[in-house]
Length: 54
Image (cartoon, rainbow, N blue to C red):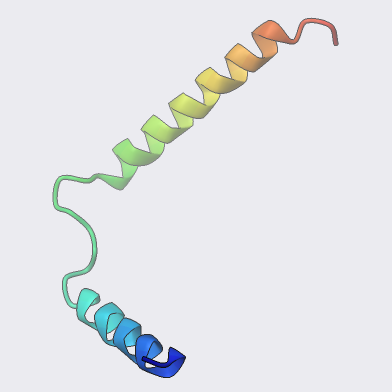
């Protein structure tokens, strides 16, 4: 198969995915973003805890 036929299949697959919206009903953007923020703040705290020489 050529590159163009693979690309056409991917475009068709992507167009079918747009019908459903792509988001699961149980995923809340606020909870997901808040969890990611807290995880990054924890990693920042751990990094600064071990980097006392500055």
